[in-house]
Amino acid sequence: MKTGNKEMIPLLKEVMRRRGRKPSQFAKDIGVSHATVSRWLHGLDTPKPASCEKFAEYSGEPLVKVMAAAGYMPGVEATPADRLPEFREYAQLKYPEDLDEDLVQVLEDLIERRRQRRWTAESKEA
Image (tube, rainbow, N blue to C red; front, top):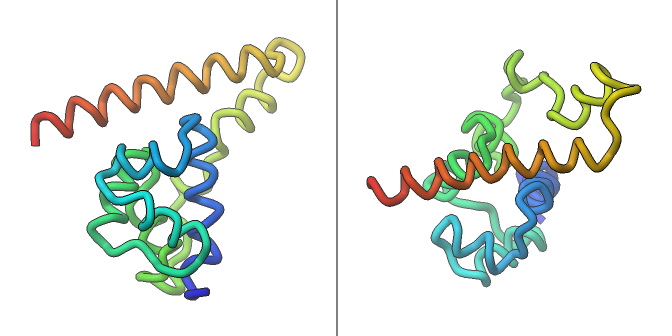
């Protein structure tokens, strides 16, 4: 396993989970082969910088975080924005009595759909 993959694999899995995508669908979304994504997920290969950039745009994650997870920026600490909680964590802290799991899931799905529309629109413009 390459060094960067220790952080990259969970990041890839989390983004696919959030978007409800299988590896083959995710590969198509970012323009790489299914075999490439499989190698990333099994720690056999690390995304190239260009793929990291596509992944960052697709996922909404900061490019610095993705590049650091891939091992291109060793020793880079997360910026303050990276330390913000994910929406689910924030919602559970802010509204512990008001939001149940179903509502949080609906809101996360809406956020991901908006990101997907933005990603699709930007891809068509390029």
